[in-house]
Image (cartoon, rainbow, N blue to C red; front, side, top):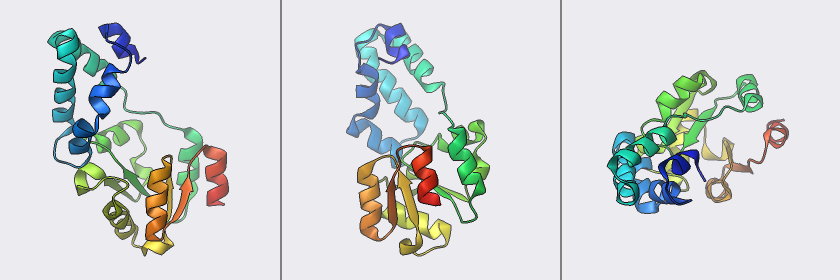
Length: 174
């Protein structure tokens, strides 16, 4: 259970159910909605369960963190001597989150699904990434923690690695 759910008195899974239902998430990660619109819609969904003020507080608490940085992965990326393109199914908030984490300089480019209108595993997002890297698709290494996304990239001709942990990433990059 997410702390925000607990503080809001919501049932376990209510927040994830509202935020990540395909009909709610897809418009946010393909650019049909802004991050703010997505979070407002989540608030409206939750308000049915706990009232508007509590729903606003829950979504605000859930929205506050911008992500976690794995220092070992950041170090690996910083040492690479090839173009590094971040490909993310994300809302319009991605770039500001990356800036707040202080990691924008680790990437030569960012391909944000909400900016390009295609989300992994849609082949178009991998093609955008290859273009941003200035490389043919078959010269790209694609690393992701979701096997379906790795399979889609591999199907296009990229070398795909299913990310498990920093040691496995180090071996793949070596």
